[in-house]
Image: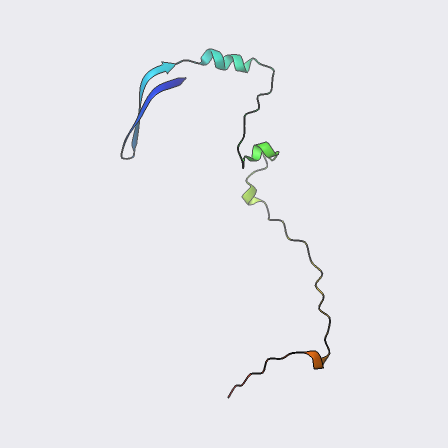
Amino acid sequence: MAINGRIQREGEVVHLVAQQLFDFSADLSGLADMDVVFKSPSGRGDEFAHGSAGGGDSRDRPKPLPEARDIFIADLHIDRLKVKSRNFN
């Protein structure tokens, strides 16, 4: 069904004032009889287009941890260490 008309709003109430009604039942039943896969256009961020359909909410999955890095700080000789002087008086 398709409607040609206008929308009226009064506060929280929304009215659809129809001027014309169109019945597309025959067109829809014709689509159901087709043996061709219908690929609907998807927008950016549509998880179904990226192959994770049925995977659930992506916010529920654990976040990937960053790879561990090998951090090496060579031991310095005590004469080369720089220590800030502090005056506690």
